[in-house]
Length: 186
Image (cartoon, rainbow, N blue to C red):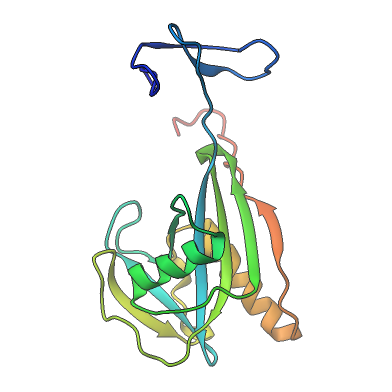
């Protein structure tokens, strides 16, 4: 951020009085601009024993498989955002059901939240602007090496593990960046 969204004047980065983090502060009107993590809301849609996945038609990770999910919009609940994203990305109307996972990804300032969603039938869009392909997968056929994001892999694995025990749990976890190896340029 370079300019204040209240008055248009330039901002400087400093720790405001009584705060403990550096913030963008307007040099004219004094408005403190807080940057907060973005929430990704999505569903794990199921029909019978099959799981619906979408092949991404957009970056990042274009061509890889994911659960339908995306950024929440202002004015909607988590469940509304998850259901909207499922409709937009897969062409499937669902009700976001049981909370499955809430995964903090602090190094990219995101929180990913997935709900279980029972599909009323196997119908889905063949493709959408965001998904080049949409398919129902039996658990044994999930393309694990082509899953787009660690949050999706973790949610899928935990759900499938829970299916074997008969109790679907909700989990709260973190995905932290891998430490850099000494002597690498990564």
